[in-house]
Length: 360
Ligand code: IPM
Ligand code: MG
Image 1 (tube, rainbow, N blue to C red):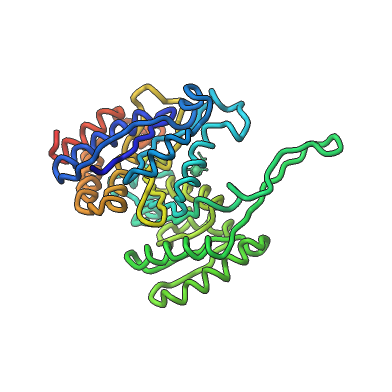
Image 2 (cartoon, rainbow, N blue to C red):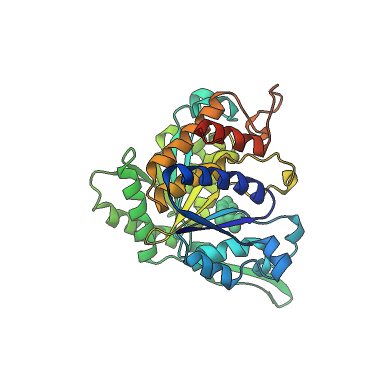
């Protein structure tokens, strides 16, 4: 039995993971993947039930699984808690505990959605990039970090820290990914200011020597943010640290039309992976059957590919999602303001994907 742990989390997390799980169960039946599911709490719902965003038992269960499917964490209910007790801490905790250092966030324009982008169609057309974000280091985890009071003044400290091994292993993931894509890597940094980025430059250049077939460019993060909306097609694989990757992956997502479309994979050494939509918990629309489940469903495709070696099943899911969009079906996030178009709910979108898969 291949165990899959499902962590729906908060906000729209449960709605979108329900649809994603239906899709995974359907392809399991067809392809005989022998999956077994276990559901657990993470984030705010875990705080409410157990007083902590992530229990050790949940980490242990995930360790003994093939892959983890996650929804989203966080919401206004828990916004006033200290950083250490917030729902987000559960997500950061599980990334760290499972060693999920490589976060892959593909941003691809679906032809049917070109009109849904806030950018002009001729700018976004053909955009197809992969953001490779380092996920267990950098300023998210660096020490020291604290808020203190010194001489009557409040002061806060976070530290951006990377060692050469952390940089080298994420760089290798980027170069390997580029090899099976368009063979171009853009390393994004702030080396004109940050020592950390200067080390990234050196180490990425060293790793690049093993990948003579892949072209490498270094790009400052501020100008990268600008080029992403100006010429998104120029990017193939982007490799960068935790904080820059967080910001640029949201930007890349919006180019493709909606944050509601973007899947992600977070991989450890050895194949264990956690799969989650890039979007957050969207508390404003939670529980109303308004969310777009496609990012979660496309994350299942990544799970099949990276953790179950089932590339064919992954392709079927991607084709089904593209076909539903080509038929004109849209959740609310995929409709531009002022556009007169009927929208469908989260469950209906899941139904349509299952129908296209021929499993419903
Ligand atoms: C993401 C999210 C998380 C992050 C938050 C929820 C902690 O924004 O996965 O991009 O910053 O990594
Ligand atoms: Mg983010």
